[in-house]
Image (cartoon, rainbow, N blue to C red; front, side, top):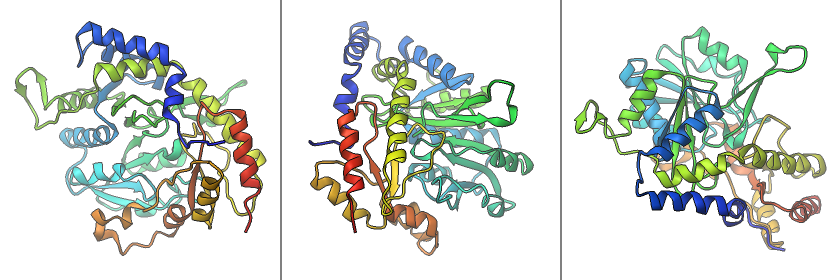
Length: 376
C-alpha cells in the first residue's frame, strides 16, 4: 500500500462533476475577472466566516500585505512600527510585515499548542508596538481571551493569518448559556484576516487565490482598491497599488468546495482524533486535542528524519512544516543571532502525517500500525 501525503487528485475527484460544471459555466460565459461568480463567492465566504466583507485577492501573501498597507493608509500603522508575530510560522506572515517597512517582533510558541504563547506577548510590547498578528498555524485556533485583553489594554490592532484554518472556530465559554457556548470562526476574531486558497489548503482552489475578511468598511474598500492597481474607478488611481485579483474560475471552484468544507473538516478531525487516541509511542509526541481543522497533523520526534524514512520505506508519504525557522533563513540574516529554542525544537522535530478527507480506514490503520511499531 502506498499512501500519499496529500493526494490532491483524489480530493478534487470527490466533487469533480460539480467542479467541472462550474468551470464550464465560467468558460462558456466569457467573463473571467471581477464578475458575478467572484461576487457570489465573496458573499458566501463572508457569510460563512461571519463578517461583512470578503475581498478576493491573488494569494494569501497578498492578503496579508494588503491588510497592513490598508492600515498604514488609514494612519493606524506607519513604517517602523512593531508587529508582534509568532516565531513559529510560515515565512509569508513575516514577509508581509517587512514588505510594509514594519518591524516583526518574534514571540516563541507554546510547545503544547505550537501557537504563539500568550504568556510572552506582554513582555514583548514596546512603545513602538502597534499590532499583534495571530497565525492559526496547522489549522489550530491561536486566539485566546488573554490575547484579546492584551490588545485592548495596550490599544493594539489584532490581525489574523487564517491561511491554514478555514472553518476553524473559537469557543467563547465565558458566554455560556444553559445549553451552549458562543462559537466564532477564525477570520472574524480580529480587525481583519488573511486567507489563502492554495490548492493544498482545506479550502483549496485549483491554483493560487486568497481573500481578506473584515467588518471594517474602510479597510475593505482600501484592500479592494489597492488590489486593483490602486484604482477605485477605471483609469483613476488613488494609490500605488498592485494587480491582485481572484479570477472567476478559482471563485467558481471555491464556491463548490465551500459547501463541503465543514464535512471535510469533520473527516479530518475524525482521523486526527483516532491518531491521538490510538498512537502510544514514547518516541512520537502527538498534538493535544484542540479546536482545530487539522490542515496539518504535526507530531514531534527527536529522530524525525529516521521516522520519516521509516514511513517512506513502508510507502507512507509525510511532510515537514517547516525545516528552517524564519529567523534562520538567509533572507533574514540580521536575526541569525536570535535564540528561540522552542521554535527551533519544533522545526527540528516536526513531521506531518497524512490527514485529509479522502483517506480510507485502511490507510488510517496502516499509519497507526507503523507508528506503534517504530522503535529505537
